[in-house]
Length: 437
Image (tube, rainbow, N blue to C red; front, side):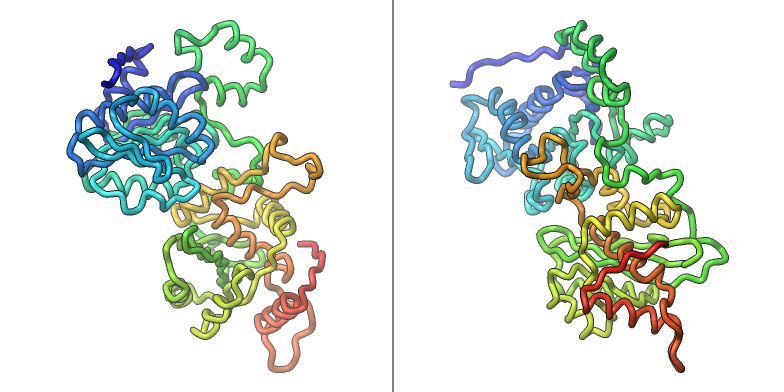
């Protein structure tokens, strides 16, 4: 028989999270505020409210490690005797009731196919990619299930841009309840420790970790990317651009097509984004055809790891080549373009790119192995599909000096023909030259 458990919120804010009736509830707070515990109790209340065997519930975490070390133990601790947890399937089956699925953002499609969902709790959701958030919203739609996100702030990703920033500006969000809290608003958090950290830590880091405030993620690969400077309303009025695209393959992970308008004088402008998972190469080819017909894309720069896919694009009449996949060189090329004002994004055209650039980061010093040089670290290989597609384009632009010819034009040969030929030769010969912009 289940042990009777009682839970009393430690503050008005925690109580508000527990009983809010809004379709979406976001608790952004400092560490040790009690966010994981309150999320577990909200889920338990929902499972006692909706007791049909067909009802389902979702508990989500950013990684398997977070799920196993924090999220799942907090939930199982208050569900003892009320059901059975199947570790192999990561499913908790309620006695006489529904099922609760444990899923992580490591596989954003892991929630696809879960029907009749009545409640979703996302723990440490500030680390979720936008794609996972969109999939969770889709699961909630049919039954109008509420979503509760509990998290410390980690970056200026979709949580901030779509919800926190409008809330800070006073823009009405009738379907969203946002609660922000400091660590010391938990009456059990040691005041002396809070004050000690406030006086010894970097203020920005302290405000994120203990104040529940949103700032840039530490260790960002493109820490130079500022939305105010890099996001623009339109391409320069005097520009006469040509269009190229970066392609990153995927099936379980999203496949990505990024379209850039290139203006040698003003730089490149990201004008379109196609970001889908579960798509076959035939479907990706069709998407590339649409992109070509819409923008007149002259060249598709593709992840070279799948030469067969590149062949399929060329068979379909699309000019496609394997991109230079030098990660360090590509990151440096894109970084330089951003810092020199030659990399722009058209507002509202690339939401997944904007989300990834806010969380694309290097491993922390704790993640560096003893035999690994800190200076040679590469970005964390996670939620980087748009980053890869953009990197292919930036590397190509560096190699070809923004697509401008390098050699004299032969009779009957256009500048564009020559730049394409020169790039193809570099790629085929695997030659890498060090160009200035």
